Image (cartoon, rainbow, N blue to C red; front, side, top):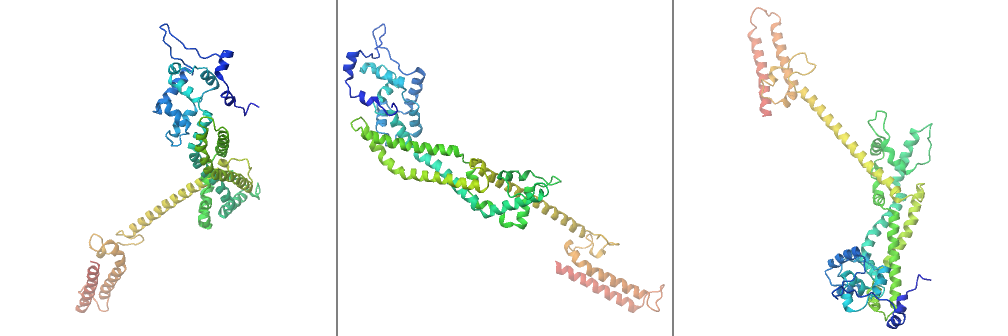
Length: 458
């Protein structure tokens, strides 16, 4: 019965002076000092009054100006949101209200109050002061709250749909299941599925030599045999975002918005029913249009929350997980695996780069040995004609010229031997004039070819 009653409305209709006279209602006494001067009264707790006075000074407005802004519901947003939120912390308590009502309305008595007490004394004259402060606070924070809540709701809805519909994710999980059944053959093989938590543990399984993890091997296998699965995460882009959403907190935020909307709607209806009360009409003008503007947004958010619950339940059931598991945990399995997958790709790429550098270094060493003055496997030095110390021919050209020069060397040697051991030749005598001419001719031709090659090179 006491939940919906409001005695203030009825009390304001009574003859309070008559009641005071008849029943000797006690008022706060005017305190006087020894010199007969009135002393400053204090109603609110000293510490609380001090803190509230500090806050009032920050508004840089007089008590009267601030009360007027409250009465008009701050339609022009003259007070910042953070400052308005502070006013919520200084709503008069029941005991403070009772003491304030007992204060004599004598201007001298009111003037003797400290600033915090004077503000409260003025505030109790505003009908439904607390409800008005809360209503303005709700209006000022509404857009900010919606902007914080809607992206989270959308992320959960989209992520729930993506993990169910992703064909690449399904194929990837099938491949992982195949690995698991192969490794556990004869033990726990032939499993029909696995918990999603398993995804986060694949990186912990190492090869016999401890140099390779199953995840790195999985990534390499995908890149070599199933390359179309390497970008599976592109089909579930909202999963990492959904993994950061605390569903309990999200539900609480949405519930606060819904409760605030209903409370404001009821307060508007109540103020409309009290047109003669001070400030009632101003309250209706300030909030009726606002309620109409946000009604569609509230309906949309309610629909999104219902859709979220439905699709999230379908997603968890699809992967044989409990519907009570938090999104942070459920989507966290996939998000963690995606991060680990990228780490494995980076490690694999680094190893490939190192292997490529090793091969290049090995090839360079082999080429360096091949271009040295003595060729491995040869029993004699390379001809002085192509020696790096005796010839200006660059090293990279020597390898190309070597076969031709060796042929010329051999021909020169054969001609000499032919002359020496020709029929009728005498080892102790000079060769015949004809033999000498042939040798000189052959040498000249060889020398000419070498010179020609050098000119062409230069």
